[in-house]
Image 1 (cartoon, one colour):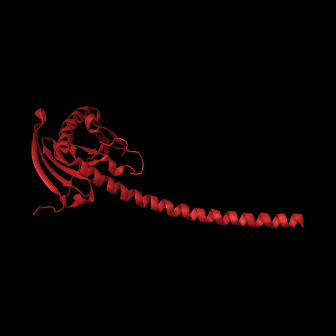
Image 2: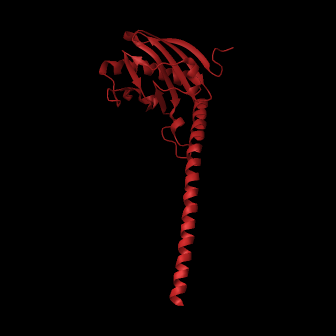
Image 3: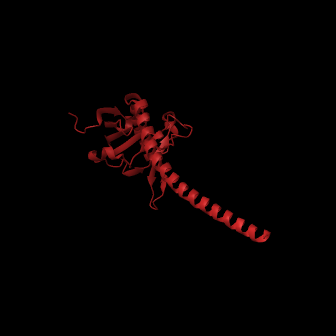
Length: 201
């Protein structure tokens, strides 16, 4: 029986060249469409979650960047709570996100950190290069070892649930405004008729 029911676990390691050996434990959740990567290497500690970007896209609108993914180094799906995931830290710099990217554009990917003012900012140059080396390995693993189609379907399902709540709430408010508007129109029409009757009398 798996240690974490509902999650598929995979272990591997990759050579990062001058950055040492990266140990990777992957937990894939086919329900949320996410994969959590627990990473351990010299100057690399913590977790990063990869999810098809479809999880945040409105399924009723045209698909933009169907292969895009969200890289989340400090926010994780509730299904991973039992794993007690820690935010990803590289060279003692804590990364933040999520950041949207396309797998084929990793060279242009810009990981972020939270600055002293609380705003997101670019990583220091050396940490940026180190982070790219780590995240490139993670994305390559994602592409090769995860069932992207199944995860994308799950992510779209999660998005549908979220947007259904949003649109139901909007619909409720708009119906209420429509009823008020119809009542106001009926009242105005009644007054106009009364005034015309007075004028023509």
